[in-house]
Length: 82
Image (cartoon, rainbow, N blue to C red; front, side, top):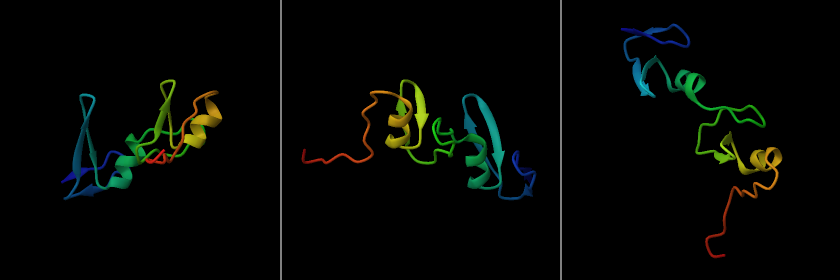
């Protein structure tokens, strides 16, 4: 059994995540997200999906990026026919 590094649960189905040379142990995706997901620099939510980057900063969506970075000009949806 392994112990989750976020909640301390000792769980027989815990799993490891290897990132940037470190090994992390979690008992759920929820704990893994809590520990490892980047945080939007505008609204503070965890970025679980792709998110966006502007000037090397991470945001959950184009709205947050455009609200924080002047001239970012990002859009969440792009019309493929345009």
